[in-house]
Image (tube, rainbow, N blue to C red; front, top):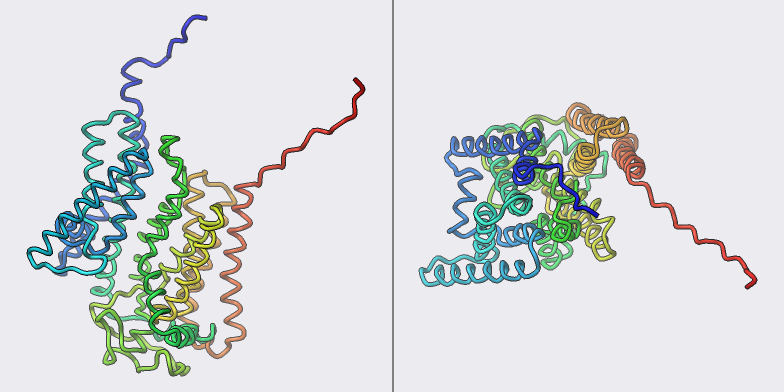
Length: 456
């Protein structure tokens, strides 16, 4: 049989993988928008006399990082494109670099503690693989390796961009809407006040566990992503949709709503503050979590220029919801971990006074709407996808409008307003479940052939 001759020319074969990756208009547009977004945040941060996300990321090449676990989780995410031998070598190199940095800091008397004492090695390894991709790889191997490095660095950049967003909300939104949300929260039974007392009763053990879960939420997302991306090295391609995509989209879109709906949280508006920000002199009264909030006419209130306005919606709830959704198709351990992280995150957000119950309801609706939009974008928009996203956007907007303009009515009629708020959230949950089941139909069971008695 004569050999089959390819219809592609040598030039087409040589350059097509690289050019196909950059020929997609949406990919180029996304890269330009992401870069412009980071530059804009850098300029805005410097306007207020603080380094922006790009500067903070560059500094972590040498200086102590803000979160070592996040950098190592990002490196683990990048390594899904590597072979097992390359993974072991990369991990060893990262640890070795961190040991050197630690010894130098110890010798020079630059003391760091906790998660700030490591992580530079992971960043160096990711940057090293980026250099290798550009200088030592070609074609699809170069593209795949750059995608892996980009995914890891994007997770870190998302954290830095979020920090810059929070700074901007504090500097540009002096007036907050906490009194409106707090009064509306009466319709849900003031869950932050109740959970705050429960968490305090658990003592330091419960508080430390919840605090660790709350802080390391991105690490939990990486664990789910590692399962979803476990076959990338063998198949030499990424799946069309995974948890990191929605995780980053929530982190980009959520802070924009903070600018529209600035809220600082119960521990700040009705307590002594946290993280060295806020304080009793900024609060309406020192009521959280011991004294139930009285029903009074809400008013706009001013707050300091340091505390982030990062309550509405609760992005920690949105991220935990996303982790829960994407863990459903994993093994039993992963499903259990996703459930635990969701419950623990909801408990922490309320129990530490970072959020009102109304924030959590909005966070769930926000997460499902963004997830539906991301999945619709990948599979192609159709009537069911448009309807689901439109329903989520409508419910989300209705919640925000109700909290702002009907809080007193909600507080005075809790047995009507509370169920309506929960019903609105459950309608989005039900719509998401019904629609995505149609998108991913269960495979039909294989029919066993009939056994017949035959005479031989």
